[in-house]
Length: 249
Length: 306
Image 1 (cartoon, helix red, strand yellow):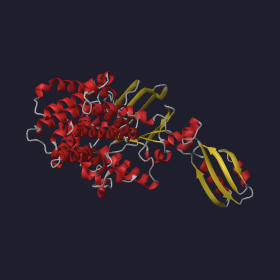
Image 2 (spheres, rainbow over the protein chains, first blue to last red):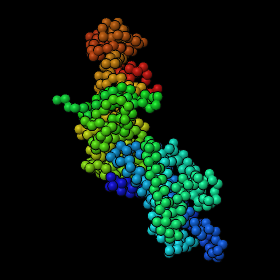
Image 3 (cartoon, rainbow over the protein chains, first blue to last red):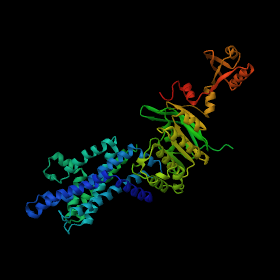
Image 4 (cartoon, one colour):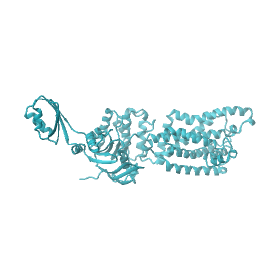
């Protein structure tokens, strides 16, 4: 199982890299957004630190990171839909590969692409948005991968129910990006209308933002145990749901 | 010695909502033969095959494949069977050799992948992406993948659909080679010519039910015993002379060219004898033997492609 998982993951990474559009969309877009925003905010940051909006000064890395996770998940939804429609999933299921191995390989590919994108982002954005030496990059990366896993499980849920590959990307986008808007990143949760607050509280993005923010600012994981626990529970719930609903063909 | 069958299917039934896809289907595939499940699209061929492969579970009935229950022992079974699915695809940008290498890594005792690539005429396409292969090359790759674990039993679902006649013939040769290596082949097709040329035995399926099972010549004899002989002759007494042959049931024609219908293995012999006896000058002589296509029409009342 482990050998098959590693081989399939490696194979899928190679196949993913061979598609230029997919790589640009998944890895390139978040990096470009980060650099562009960093350039805008960064020049202002250098001239007048106190005037800098909170979003640009504090939350830009968080936003960019979530964007990475979101685009990884969107690409997962699209790939699953294409694989299903093309009968690739079914063909793999007629081999001794366990279904869990196939799904795990795709999650691994997305986690690796997330980590690589984060690294590229830090390198490319260095000039405009120098990352403070005090930021615990390794811990932050782990927090991001942890959050991505949970968001990926929503992706599987969406991938389980989208009818055709043609709709996968638009439906995924329509679901994921509004969720991002409710995450408390742009508008503090407390100042949202009660209904939106209630929705935000059951969405993983809210907890992901809280965790990522905390870790970025050097707070330990121990102070965000609730966030981590909620994300973990949601991961299990979404995965269980999608394993019930997932269609192989 | 009666060796146990490779596949034994007993009264299976499978419904999708109100649609009955397969109804009370029973048949047996013997070891070492090419067995064809033939019928039009939507007749239940693929559903039946996928139940046998363990990819679907029948609602009722029993299946035994190489002594295993595909619903229960699917993982044990997958080690011993090779599968080619209808209209399957691979990742667009996977290379031929990568697919073969990955597939062979899944089995404990794989066949030699490079040799398979060569045998199936794909050596020049080793490094080509799947999306760049032609239809025939894709099907040959799928055959390679189906043979990668050196299986005892190979499933081929609509193997040559969409291929041009030349690629189709090449694939037929490959399937015969599979049998020559001692493997059992279970295939589905809606092409009667394919079934006739390739299969040792066929089961005809229509609307989810098996109508008859046998070798193609057996089925033809059983359901379309009538033979047709077409003779052109300038003998003025021809019509009367043919009428005297007891095996001929009907005579049609314009006085020079006759269409003689009758039944029985003796029909052609008797006609030849009649021609020789009366020293009739023959300018055309042709016999028409019914095909599985005719059998299908006779059994179901409709053509296989309508």
